[in-house]
Length: 253
Image (cartoon, rainbow, N blue to C red; front, side, top):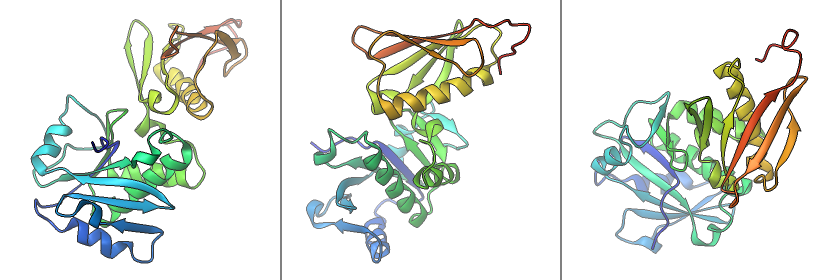
C-alpha cells in the first residue's frame, strides 16, 4: 500500500496532462532524479532528493476539490482550488517512514514541494497533518526562510486555534513530536499575546521533543510561569500560563 501524501501542491493541471514529462525535463541539472519506470502507466512518480525517496501521486480535479473541501482545511491566504486545479501529493518513501518527522527529511520534502510548484505554476499548497491550505506565494516565502536556516514554518505545518473557555489547541504538532498542546492563559492576555507564546512553545517542542514529566519554566516576562502537565500517554500536554508578577507593573503582550 502506498503512503498517504503529507504535502499537496495544487496547480492547473488538465486531466491527462503531461505533468510527469514536464517535471522530468526540469529535473536535469538539479539534485533531483526521477524514477518513472517504477510506476509505469500510473499517475505516480518516485523522486530521489539527496538520496531520499519521495512518492508523487496526482489527484484529478474532482478528487482535489473533494480533498480540499472547506470543512477539511483551514485556509491561509488561499482560495479554494479552481475546477481546473489538480493536486500533486508528496509522501516520504517507505524507508523514511520511521524518520519522516526529522528536520533533514522535512526540509527536503518542502524543498521538493517548492520546486514542483514553481515548475507547475502552482496556486496553493496544503499540509495534511495540520489541515492547512495556504496560497503558494506564502508557502514559497515561509519555506524559503526555513531552508535558509530560519524557523520551522509553524503557521503552515502546525495550526493552533482558540477552542473556547480560554483554551488554545494545536493541530499537527503530533507529526513532529508525538504530542499536541492544550494551553490556557490568564483572561487579561490578548489573543496576539497568547499566539506569541504558543509559537515559541510549539517551536521548542517540535525541535526538542515532547514533554514527558510535569515541569515548570519561566515565561516571556518577569513573573510569568509556564506549568506543563503531560497526559498519561504523553499524547497531549496541558500548559497553564500564570503571571505571578505585580500586575500593576507588568502588562502581558
